Length: 179
Length: 137
Image (cartoon, rainbow over all chains, first blue to last red; front, side, top):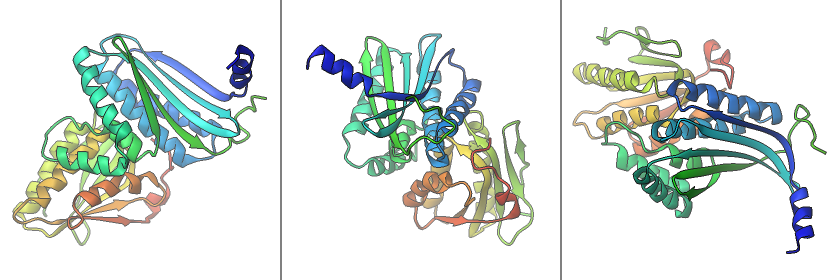
């Protein structure tokens, strides 16, 4: 594709609203951050259900980051955008983790991405962990099964990037039309 | 009186034994996050002990004032339900949901699928439940 064509394609993406925060991982912050994501969704969308799904996803991701990040600074971005007439809400987290943790999370993420039925996988994980005391290990599977959200990930060195996305209805008037 | 334990209250959540009603009832309110998980786990173990000791056939869990639950708190329910499912003498767990909080059904249905003979999901409409803000904290 020619460079000018790529620029035209890129220009088609309209960002309706966007937030980006960097924070020091901290358990007491988790609920506040997920509430912020929920409020962000409510400003742009007249859809409480999608706000809840993203609040849940933000909570689970931020809690994971807080447990497993090896650095003092992590980031979260939320974007409401339109591409070719389709509106999407996207949330991205970045954090660094130990090689052992990255290997474990990659194993889980691969399974989540490739398993055809997210609800069946979630039910299976629930049944498998029912007798195990302590850590749930259900958060990422929950995002896909209960939240109905898609996700992708990449690992670059020690840095894990997770992207959670969901198709949404057209933003309502409280979000400024980017055009 | 069936309950031999006290309520657990914190700034963002409360777990309460309810002393009236036709079946033993507990009530969970607020936000079920990482801070709430260890006390919730302890609370549910006490609930189980009293129900088994008193040979009760059912318990109602009023969740109409519960605004959010994370996967760790859901896991506490999973462990409890599994314990009841595999017990020699089990009982029914009636999870009472708020119809204004549509997420509750989605979050709790996996628990029903885990143990269909143990878990009952029921929507309860009370003036208190009606007053709940759908996205409130």
